[in-house]
Image 1 (cartoon, rainbow over the protein chains, first blue to last red):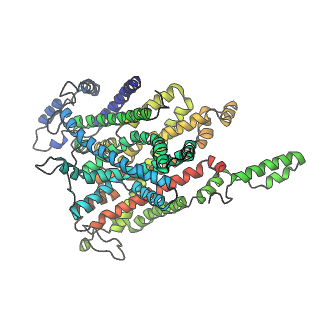
Image 2 (tube, each protein chain N blue to C red):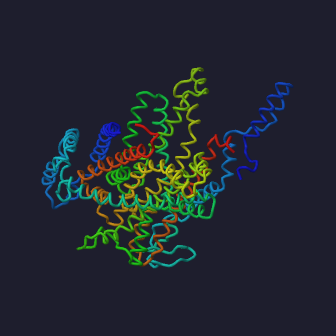
Length: 319
Length: 320
């Protein structure tokens, strides 16, 4: 297992290099420039030239890439490894690392809620196949799947936040408070809007996975030897039906990350996605590049995590 | 419904088998021609029509496309022309959904936005299909290091945080421009199509009919384009149909965030939502309309895709 993980991590290096090249090329072939926002009749153009030199944007592209790329990997040791934000001059490492926990908080909670709701729903729909419950779940799943999460977020915000005033409209905390209940209260709407689409997708997968298991011989054997049906379903059925669901984890992380960018913006949640949107608007190159790299690393790690978990729960799989 | 004797191939196969046996025995060659032979596409149609939801989805999609073409064409520039006497006006016969904050006819604007969304959806999927089919068929046809190179590139693109990348592309290369949005979605979304085509090509490479074409001296290009590609088309058609839904949602999300199509340049479901949220207290229903249209498009595309998946799958014949 350890060698497998190591091998996968080594394989991730060329992928990350590829991501960095693509991101770098996009940023640097973009027509605009970060100093454009200062350009006006009253600003001395020489000053803008100086700003370009300060940002290192006057050097040839390969040289810029080489210096950015070599510095990037030194982030565990150097605060300035990812450069300084063009916006507020702070080191990008600290700008990013203070946002990561917030995004993980949102994504993790959405994943938790998704698991808690979708697995029982999927099992119920499969065990009572073609029943009313199955049809209702399937209908809700279809609608939930078709609802874009940003529209759902907007609806939740306006119904429960603006009209009913049950939940706060933005942010992670009420000013001056930082206790857990306040945080949870702020998390309800963003997590719900992120989770509903996932719940819809997961419960459908769970249903088909469970249906497949229900027709296996060992299920009949378990029933034949007189086990209670709840024990057959949960002990013998569910545990096997859960195995393919774990691969969903790897697939869900990119979509949660994309969803987080929108959800965080709608709810002004100070996470990576909100940061990315702001950085793109402000031509904040160092932050944009770092966010893309971190996003890519999260996708790679999510896939690795899913594969490792898969191996852990299914003894038939050997690495 | 599946068991009610509609299974198209099973009786046909046995019929043909029985006949060819009798033909050999009795030499009745003429009778073979009397049996109506159904082509693959006729079978696809039979199977598709049997899938009730897919037919409903097809009709819905056709209706949406029809509305998106007809209404904006008939109404011309009414979708942006403000009528200052009707600001926040209620529903009437010529404006069934009322008027916006600057007196634009919401219904006409919504239909124009639908047109934009469908344009972006279809065009982005076209780009996805072109890139995916080209790279996927090259990888699957040539194999070895070419395949390896292309698939490593696919790995990189798959690991990119796609939505960030799309935002970056759109923001840096022309915010508010429809074509940039289409290209941004197309250039980042082709990996699934590429992998599907590659898998089909790898499977077909050793197929008898491909070997036969090769033995007859057909060029690589001809084998790939005339013999293998048509046989590899089914999963692409399905993926493309499902991809329309994704592209439409991404465009709406981009425009909602203010990166996609800007409110001053054209109507889009996303920028209508963005505008509606500013006037929520005045006119809350306005955030519902674009969402409902979006859901309709997504539902129609997904059920159409599901129906096509079942209809195009040749294995479905034997099962039913």
